[in-house]
Image (cartoon, rainbow, N blue to C red; front, side, top):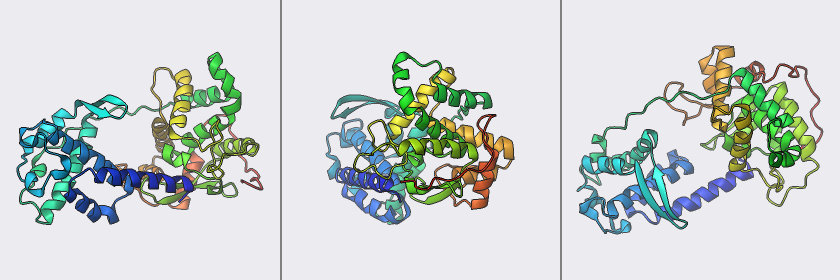
Length: 365
């Protein structure tokens, strides 16, 4: 696991423990039980959602527990809850105010977000009921909010080329954007090419280290959301863009703590997810002003392109890290090197793309 992902894991672990310290004691018991089978990111998300639920109960939204401190909730209190209370909670979180250190923040949750928050409650109740710590499981009686399918937003083939052209040449940019374009264009083309040529997630991209990339085999190692590492292959277009950036990267002295990072910011630190989101948005707004393009939409674009070219939905699922093509994107399966190389062969980003092999750099560090 890279230094970046190790640090992120430590940060989430610290934040998770802080939230658990605010919750009733039986929540700590539950989290201890699921620790071997869940990632820290999953447990952190559940902790955040459970804190929201107990705040709802404590802050007077239900008369049963109005004013009761969250830490003082007992297992017997859960026996007093009904499915109606949980349904009222789901209605409440559609649109509510949340007090933070920075002030009042308006929170909105769509059906998908509410479904996720309900899952956190269900999982807690299911565990407590299974262990006979409570005698009723009212959460099991609550229907999951109906999820409405959204149209997949992605780039067409000509829009992919337009996006890369804007990043490379800067056409359509404002004077302010042009001021920084010369210093970032090689890096930005490499980032966009990697997204579009491999379908990786933004968290996987920012976590790449120099020694994760092997140009002798045109492959690189990424860390998936669950912490599993996989090796992906990339094609000649991506290789060309990455090599161009590496030549530029060698002239930069990274700040302490970012020496191993593959992609650096203007401040000579490991580039952040927010910075990557902003650069994608900047170029997409010029190339495709009618589409709201994000790094995840570039991932969808890759998946669509790969499926159109290969016709193999299982290949697409494997490359994107989907365990089940019909259900969820939250579980990942191992991918064979042969399938990875087949995926890299299919994707061509621009018509004048390189097709021959290249000479790998002698030193990546």
